[in-house]
Image 1: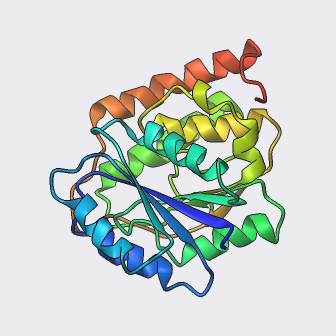
Image 2: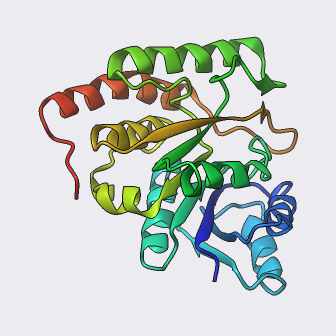
Amino acid sequence: MSNKLVIIPTYNEKENIENIIRCVFSLQQDFHILIVEDNSPDGTAAIVKRLQQEFPHLYMIERAGKLGLGTAYITGFKWALERDYGYIFEMDADFSHNPHDLIRLYEACARDGADMSIGSRYVTGVNVVNWPMNRVLLSYFASKYVRIITGMRLHDSTAGFVCYTRRVLENIDLDNIRFKGYAFQIEMKFTAHILGFRLQEVPIIFTNRTLGTSKMSKKIAKEAIFGVITMKCRALCGKIRKR
């Protein structure tokens, strides 16, 4: 059995889901996949169920509705911890993250000793393809802002392409993770940082989706901006502890 699980949250990803699944299963290393499906009205779940007949290590959790990115990953993390996975990955369904980079994230932990590896768009400059300039600037300077407020020495704190070692997730109180949108990505990294785990950035090229619709919104962006200050205050008050 593989000790590597890729968690992919989905909502209306019918254009991408079959191709991303086939691509991950075609990699030279053995990965399992868990789809966390938020009741997509476009039939994403039906595609996954069909592919489950072909791929025995394709799993799916179906939820009642669109409950947020953070809660999708928390659901997936708990599922993974109930099993024997040693490396748990976050990855988008839309090919903005190259599945072949899963191996590089894995090696950063398994070979180089990182507790958490992050597919970074900004550690070697700005490696983003097909994003409008305003989106690039928002993301880039958001990471700069997070770095100043939190003290984390990360260039891409909002990245959503991540490998966690099992012991990181075992030591984080997942029920105490507060944010549901993209601030969730910052909160998980900041929590791991506060708990003393080693975070390592792995340079990647991020390619904006060509199929489907982005889930980013002004509400999600605002949560990230103000959530950073809340997280820092909680850390200063000693409220972030190992489970």
